[in-house]
Amino acid sequence: MREPEPLQQVDRTYVRYKGKKLSYFAGCDYFRLAWHPQVQRAAIDGLKKYGLSVSASRLTTGNHKVFVEVEKALTKFFDVPAALLVSNGYNTNAIVAQALRENVFHVLIDEKAHVSLHDAARQFGCPVIPFAHRNPEDVKRKLPGKTWKKLIRNPSNHMVLLTDGMFAHDGVIAPLDQYIKVLPKNAVVLVDDAHAAGVLGRTGKGTLEQTGVARTRIIQTITLSKAFGAYGGAILCERALREKMVQKSPMFAGSTPAPLPLVNAAIAGIGILGRDKSLRRRLCQNVQFVKSALAPHHPTIVDSPAPIVTLVLASSEQAAATCKRLIAHNVFPSFIQYPGGPPNGYFRFVISSEHTRDQLFDLVCALCEGES
Image (cartoon, rainbow, N blue to C red; front, side):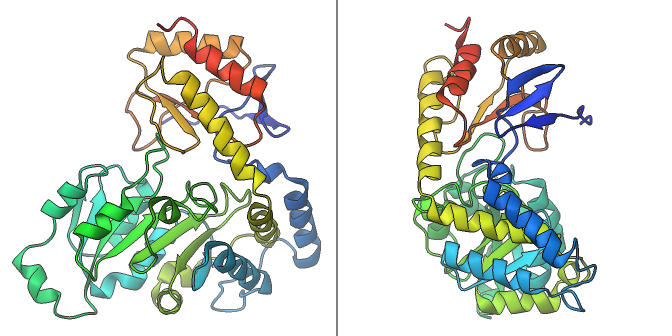
């Protein structure tokens, strides 16, 4: 991967690129809450009231009241017993692994899981077995054998399955309901729901709500930097696990929390997304418009409610021609290379609730022009 050139974001849905103002279908600010006046005002107010940082671990002198407030807001939004705010979304999965590793004897992980989950898997210190992408039957085949029957007699021993909720590279959704059916009763599913939290489900509770599974055996990790427009990570779980993470995770104990103004902004973002139902409604309408228009021309685009459109082209020549067409239609050509995605790169377009119909039409025209 190469470091890309800097981009100047303009307003909520544009960037300035090589002297041109182009529609921006990239990033992960699905509702553009990072630009929302109330969220920005909350950040400014937080800076004035609290300063930039506690500059200390939450377990020493850095457990600020604003951290408690955002955790309360998260428990209410997601209807979950407890939440633990941590420094960033990437670290959430490792903190869970550090807390559970004493009693985990077997780990299964989706082969296309986010790199943060693969990093976390190593923290368990036990066999880590990859399974075929979104394949419950392969999960079933890779359950531990006779050893498992002996270990399972101890109710404190667990096996853990690790998966993204909504996969960021193409927007496919993990079949959580099917995993729950094939896993043993005391297995735990760790779901990295960074891209689905606030986006999927009738009320935005993420992949769990989208697939209709109960929280009983699921740990949900999220970020505040995508749907909620701010920064920081959080783990949604039972109270007992929250206490265990506080006591047993060196990563949690030794890290400085997210900056105070951004946590204050996250509280505002959570509140807006909880109150304003039109945001998810507009997002769904925009996603449906784009995917329906593109489907006849690009049948490989994933048909899911995810606001992600991925296009993999056969050659570098096709990719270059597509870049030119996008710029001609005043759309930024978001061609990326990212771990877990196609090795030669791909176009990844992210639809937001705030894109206008004209912007969506420009994107569709650029991607359909010249296609049979």
